[in-house]
Amino acid sequence: MKQKVALITGSNRGIGLAVAKSLLAHGHKVVITARKEMEAQKAQLSLKNLGDVYCTTLDVSDVKSILDCRNYVEDQFGKLDILVNNAGINYDTWQTTLSADLEEVRQTFDTNVFGAWKVIQEFVPLMKDSSHANIVNVSSGAGALSSMSCNTPGYSMSKAALNVMTIQFSKELRPYNIVVNAVCPGWVRTDMGGDGAPRSPEEGAETIVWASELEDRNITGKFFRDKKEIEW
Image: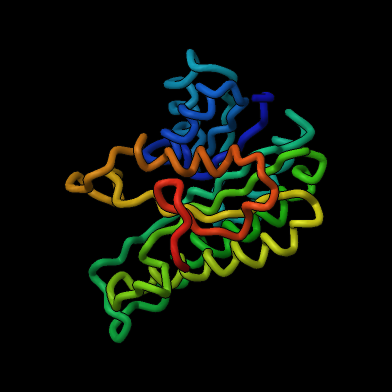
């Protein structure tokens, strides 16, 4: 497979770091991002023996941070082939729809929805020259309308919105040969998922990596788990 340039949001730990490891193993150039420079550098150092790994700061809830990150990628590579929107916050198990703190929900949307949205808007111009550009939005079964519950209201609604955004971007970007899909990694042992989750970060990363390397331009606007399409 031809070497590509990949950027992963929220990739200093957990699923994002596992995605980075796998993409490096596949021979790609990978940009690690984190909100704090020290965290990004620490992650880069942990991966330095695996391949061409770079790092920069990125807070997807901060427009200036997104613009600075885009400029870094443009200056360093001049293009982007793979974008993984992995950054996500606030699995709000303590809230209900009726009693939810809406300011907290807004903060969740700022990262999980508007952050991913702005990242795509800013990086698409760098992806248009790629012959096989892929955008992967890391979603969740909690955002599936087909199995929606009343738990984790802010998180679930933000992931449902991310799924809608995936469909809309997939249609708008099809003329540019850019594939856009959403992936549910399953319940994974991360800071958010907890120690009791059945999947390792590496297992959670598998379908994300698979979707990020799709060659078929017709597989777009889909929702996947375990490399199989699932209902929205």
